[in-house]
Image 1: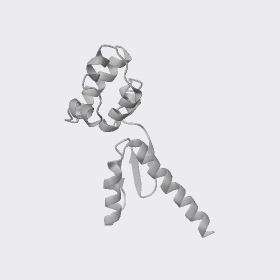
Image 2: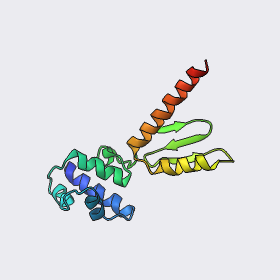
Image 3: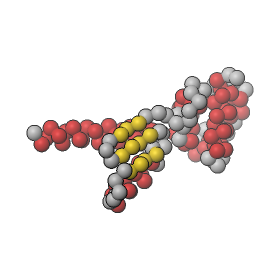
Image 4: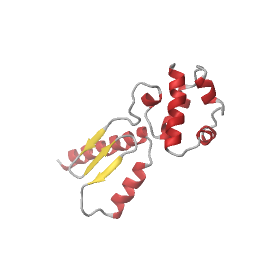
Length: 136
């Protein structure tokens, strides 16, 4: 199966598993409604379209391209209070008591794209290190 056919197949599969209409995804980003048909016939599409669809479906671009069979990107961040795994950031809060702000943060964080999550984590990490140096 050609790469474009794999992309079309995986988009259809993921959309179906998530009860999302492919038509809705394409119209959300104003992408040509015949995109999947073109991909199935071996025609290439804009890389930006693949990025957008991957974000919408919460899967990795590598998965859509057929470079991996694992739909989610693999990253893991652990500390004593929190474990975050995967593109959809399955958050496990290990604290027995969690305040409302923390719960709201994790609720919002789950909705971010993979790239947005990385930016947030980088920002928090930079703030932590700048706070640590301020205390010295």
